[in-house]
Amino acid sequence: MSVEQPLWRALTAYRVLTFVYVIGLYIYGYHHYTHPLGAGAYMAALGVWMACTFRLVASAERCTKQFLVGDLSIAVVGVLLTRVVDTHERIAAGVPTLPSIWTAGAVLGFAIKGGWRWAAVASAIVGVANVIEAGGFAQDTVHNVLLLWVASVAIGYVVEVARASERTLARALQIEAATRERERLARDIHDSVLQVLAMVQRRGAAIGGDAAELGRLAGEQEIALRTLVSSGVAPGGRESAEAAEAYEAVAVARSARDAKSAAPGEAAGEPRLCDLRALLAPHAGAQVSFAEPGAPVLLPAGAAAELAAAVGAALDNVRRHAGGDAQAWILVEDEPDGVIVTVRDDGPGIPHGRLADAEREGRLGVALSIRGRLRELGGSAELMSIPGQGTEVELRIPRRGKAKR
Image 1 (tube, one colour):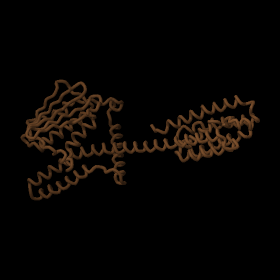
Image 2 (tube, helix red, strand yellow):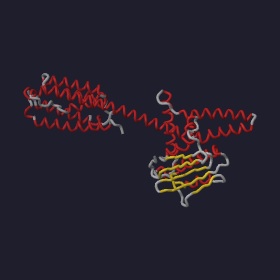
Image 3 (cartoon, one colour):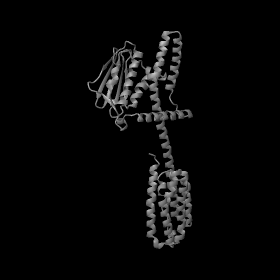
Image 4 (cartoon, helix red, strand yellow):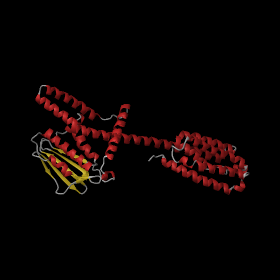
């Protein structure tokens, strides 16, 4: 919700309440006016104006400049008309003008709509009208004018700060959405294109001949693509803004497509459940041992698929870095507050600082395919490795969307 909208609702209520107050003042001082019918005619005109423009202060879109000018004109006319319909003695004694504190609502409309500069101009016009009505710079008149000027300028400034904060928040949310979509695309690229290019490079070098040249080209494209994936969107600049908008558009389109193709239960807010064991069982084999609970491990289909993909990325790292003879174990634990999947191997382990070097080189298997996926699910991925003693990856996701830190 816009931070500005509550101010418009408050202004609407202020105008109504102060109008009732002004009518009360008129009724109370009816017999003291020099021309009570003239004052009554102004009150009637003010009531018609309020009825016709009531909805115009409901939002910034409806509150136009023309309305604000008309509203301020009604207030100024009422202030100046006080000299005609009231006695000089009452004016000198400091009795309220015909519109009284309703005038402040016209000035506040300028403050909310245009900020402190508009408020300063509108309050200055009202101040001049009050000085003319009082016939000079009386102490009470100057006090009221300065109070209105300071209050309206302060509110206008607060509105400008609130608008700037709202724009900053919107931009931050846009960048966050773009970053999440970029990480998702990077994970997909890492799990498919980059691995295929790496395999083509290895096989081409092993076969030789024309295949070696093809492998060399595949290796060059892999390096270029890894650099692109790991470069990120730099803050600031026209290019980064356009890239963020493009990624956001992709994210919105993907969300709309997923919503359209969702199952009836998912569309109603009830995600389809899936047994995680069925997704992890195909990984079992001669080199991979799979230990599972006796009962189904039910998770939302999307979360189960992402968790299974993270396990696949961990096993791919085992095959790639621990060698073809390395043994791996998958353990699934179904706890009341979440699901834990542990992937362990007996390979040589990961040297200290190797993961940081891999991220700088654009090799984002752990950063995106594993940790990125778990972060999107509100969970965590812990990697423990001792050189010479293997590596263990613990993947944990909550059941009720509570993030693990």
